[in-house]
Image (cartoon, protein in one colour):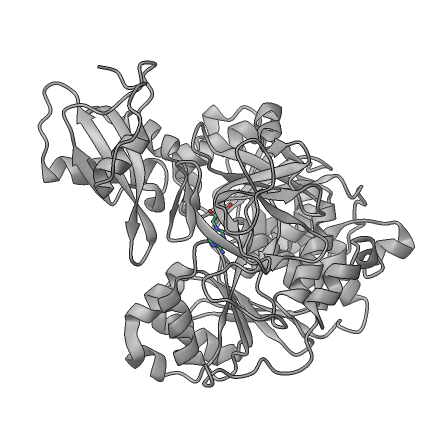
Length: 568
Ligand code: PRX
């Protein structure tokens, strides 16, 4: 390991052990302006506070999509998010309303998201790859009032089936206005760049991220403004953001990493934040690091594996020496990726563990801590993690069980939208139970073992098998479908579907391709099964539930276990 560069300079978290002894979340409050003014709004803390202070002319956002480059200071960000806020206000957006943003990454997306928050409205970011069904489910469930989108994505919004949707703002150059459709840029051009921010309560809703479980449709996880406390602190402790850092989080704001760490943590810390448009491509990514001199880089194992797969040739074309700190989230960080990081960058990739529901990092590797490669690290200061048995009792070190977190913490979800029962089901007494299995070692490091439920993590994206199965059975040829995650060397898992066909349909490669396309067009490309296997019949319980456990055992050649609930 002597090849590794030392992480340079003083770290924001001087000693992890000391902080764990003495840190209380109330100490973080003095770092926010609301501690003095009583006025709360995350967008103000992230942008305006800096724009009105010493960082006014500091670069806040650097954008590049392969062709277009744009640069914005904190002052610019304040002005542009005010303008966006005024556009939304002019179409009637008020505190608490749900405003969805469904567009490719661009600076405007970030202005609109921050502008929404400035009105005290709740923002719902949607991944641009979502297709009609996915868009419909989210807008309907949340009773969204406004969506901001582009002409290209408009056909995926089933307007007639969304009774609460009042306005569709289209961001584009030549927008044909009609009915609910309004030209965003026309309004923005005329909008004032002054805005009276709507002050909120720290417990007021801020952002709604839909995420998948093993049953039912995706659920709306609501985070409140108070989450900013944890975004700020983990940005310091874990990302180790320093005044001169150029920071790049590769996640899309449609996912929680792309908002908590693509927007809130960097801006709250007054960092310079790189935003990249366009699709993943190894050379393009390396070129971004070189172009902007990225120093702190937060990405995911699947991306690292793809870069690894692109080989040294791609790597050696670029000067990547600016990097000083690399972090990972979303999936297990395997030893070969860590090795690749050591050898390629001379840096150890720091793993972080958290979930949509936790709102921010919970278990991490810190610059000032000894890393045990393969471990997700230790709980952040101010939080407590444990492994519980199935009755909710903490287990001693090295016993595998349910990874749980002691409630509350600042960025904890406050609600599952319109589903209190689901929300309650996460908690066992004082503990939030993650759905991951893990163990803790004698030094308090946590080691990920897998999911307890059937949730699939493919290329870092969380997919619920139920959502895919529901779409599959809408296809005329499909009688029954069961979906599992199959281990994959690059993507972590891929989606595999077992399908029983209706009478009159014969298995064929054409039919497989057609079914894949059907899921892609209904949900999203990442939710489509990469593998399909036709079966005469699927294993079911007597109550008719597909037994995914048995499908998984078939796939992996494992024992099928207890089959007492299986029909015939
Ligand atoms: O299974 C864990 C996995 O991702 C799940 C959460 O997914 P999502 O809500 O989409 O959030 C992803 C990024 C915040 C977890 O239940 N996961 C997340 N981080 C890690 C991980 N698995 C292993 N190692 C990690 N570091």
